[in-house]
Length: 75
Image 1 (cartoon, rainbow, N blue to C red):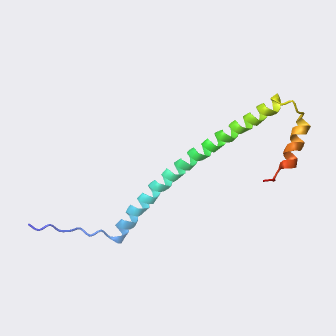
Image 2: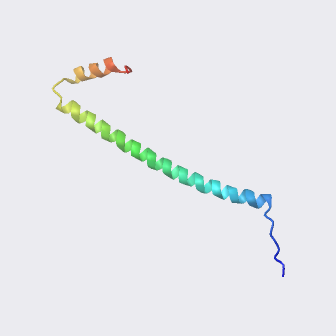
Image 3: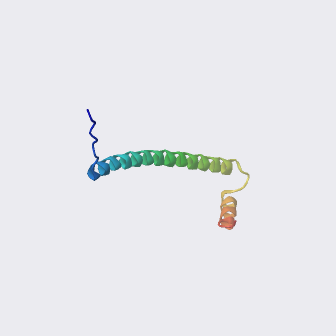
């Protein structure tokens, strides 16, 4: 008994590829959310560290602000 081979139509291939793309997009969006959350936590931590450094500094608020403004964009 001979086996018959089923041919996959172009529409079936398109539907299959759409599913693949949909899963990849969902995974990308999930990974992007994790990345954004991590970067937000890092920024919050840095902000906290800066505020603690300012609070414990012997310099005044105006001195620190002037220093930051005078060095902004210099690298």
